[in-house]
Length: 367
Image 1: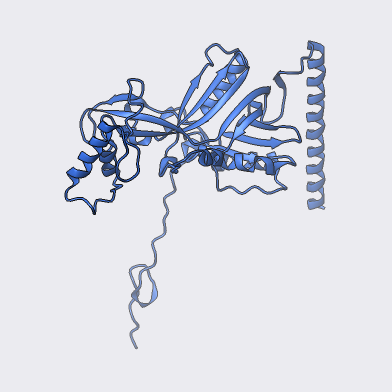
Image 2 (image 1 turned 180 degrees about the vertical axis):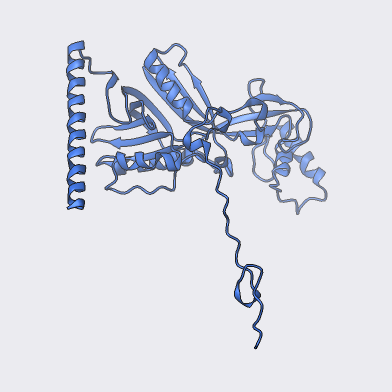
């Protein structure tokens, strides 16, 4: 008889092997199921939300807070008008969200809630004053956006919480756990480009939240050399040699007048005192301007947002539950017990209605 064509190694027609199927399963993610090893835990991730009727008032603040919490934030998650807190609690596990920053507003003031998921607690702050990043950009003469600064998480500086009461220390713990932990031995200087400062004033009973960008420059270097190190070359067409450019600036500094380009006679070395100068060890991760051990000038520039907060209350759950502290309402032990009994009765009623509903659905399916 007539011989047909042979088949491939896996029995496919025309001699083409079939695509190999992956039969191996992926390793389980210990960060989702929980791990006792702290080195394998995910960095904290915050979700910034707006709730309530007057949400347009805090729209700029929401955008600035999302930018401040980068890169560990779900800034691409879209929020709809019909979403409630339960919808966001359902995506906490898949998205790895550890904190909620909930903004709300009334006709009189604005509020910020900082909640730890999935079981709380929640601290509610009243926003006394706030300034957006656009306000700082318009107030500066020469504003330049920090390029690449939002690729790395900011440093966190807490001050004033040592003498705070237990409620203030709880707020400090909430703020501290919102940002990833930095290991000093493995920390790269080039990754330190932003810092968040949270200061507590016990006299005024307020919390200051500020966001800065970190600028590192070699100490003792003139402005002309810094421009070259930054690859911002000036106009040199009217000069014979680059030494004339450097010598001209030195003469301008000595004479106390500006250079030919209309810039200030100072070499941007102002502020190079002992408080702003740090000495770095010899390392491969260096700032432009030379290798080895050197001194750098560290300057902080506030980029916003800036918040002045006052603590209103602390709740046990996520934006709900037993009130652990209230700044304006004080209740007796009997009133707290009565309120707790009402909360338990409401929870039991909700549970019984859910069970009855599930039983009715099951009966309809069987019938």
